[in-house]
Length: 232
Length: 154
Image (cartoon, rainbow over all chains, first blue to last red; front, side, top):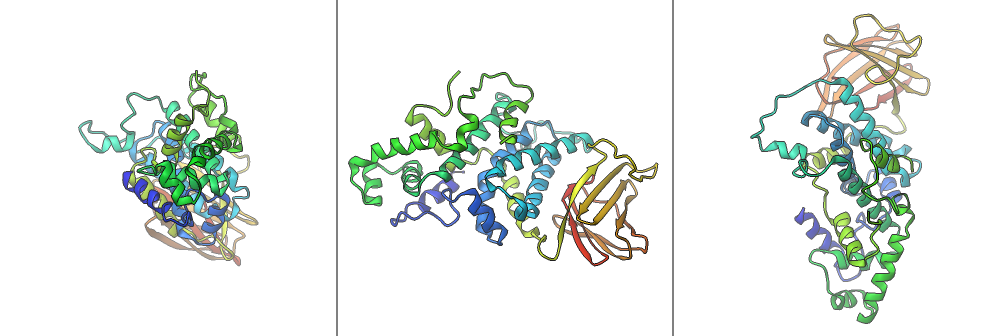
C-alpha cells in the first residue's frame, strides 16, 4: 500500500506538473477507451481504481474464500470482454457493482465448495479482512462507494485542481512552498486555490448520489447503499 | 449523523488521500487476478461476445427451454443469431449450438484451454467436467465465431 502511494506521489511530482498518462487524473471514459484499444497501463489504472469497490461488494456477501476470489476474477474477465460495449464509461462503477452483486448471488445459489477453515490459518485475514470483526460490511461498502465517488469526482476536476490536490495529498505531502514552486505560482495563492478546488470536488456530479446520505441511515443488507451506485 | 462530503477541508482532504492513494485493504491476489484478466481480451471484430442470458442456478425457468431430466444446471448464451445452451452435470458439459452444421468448441479457464471438441451436424457437443472458477466457451459454427461470458460452472 505504501509502495503504491510512494510511486504515485513521485509520478505527480516531476516538476513539469504533468500527471502520469494513466494516473488518477484521467477520466474513466479515457481509461476505458484506452484499455479497449489495448493499452494495458489504462487497464492497470482501472483495476487500481475499482478493485476496492468490487472487493467491498464481495465482502458484503458471506462467501467462502475460493468463491469470493472466483467472483472477483469473473467480474474482471467479464469487464475485459465488455470494454467495447461500455457505452457510458461514467456508469462503470454501477456496472461493476451490479455485475459483482449478480455473480455473488449466483455463487451463493450454487452453495458449493464449503471448505473447512482453520481459524489459526493466517490466510483467513486475507479473505475476510482485518476489520471484519468490528465493521459491518454495509459500512465498508458505503465507505468504498464514497471513495469511488471521490476518485471519479477528482477525475472530473480541471487539470489545475488535480495537480494541486495530487501534490498536497502525495506521500509525503508537499508543503505550500514546495507546491507553489512546483506549479510556478505565488505561495499565497495555494491555500485559496486548494479551498476552491475542494469546493468544486464537493459540488461534483460524481458525488451527488451520496450527498447528504449519512451512515446512520437505515440499511437492509447493503441494498440501500448498493442501490445508490447501481441506480446511477 | 454527519453530512457527506465533509464540509471541513482537512477532513475532505484526508478522505481524498484514502481515495486516491490507498487500496481499501484489497488482498493482493485480487489485484493480481484483476490485472491478469487483461490478457484474455479476445472479443473483437472477428469474435462476437455471447452474453449469458439464462442460468438455472439463479434465474427462473424459461418456458420451452429443452433440458434433460438428469442435468444439474442449464445455461444459455446468445450472440446475435447464435444461441448456445449447455447442461452441466457431474459427468461434464453437454451443449447445443444453433445454427447447426458442425464446427468446433473449446473451453478454457483463466489459465488456459482445458478441453475442446467437435460440434456435430445437429449442433451437439460435449466437454469434460469444468474445473472450478470462471470458464469461457469459444465456438466456431456456421460461419460465426463466438466467445461466451465468463461464468463459474461449479
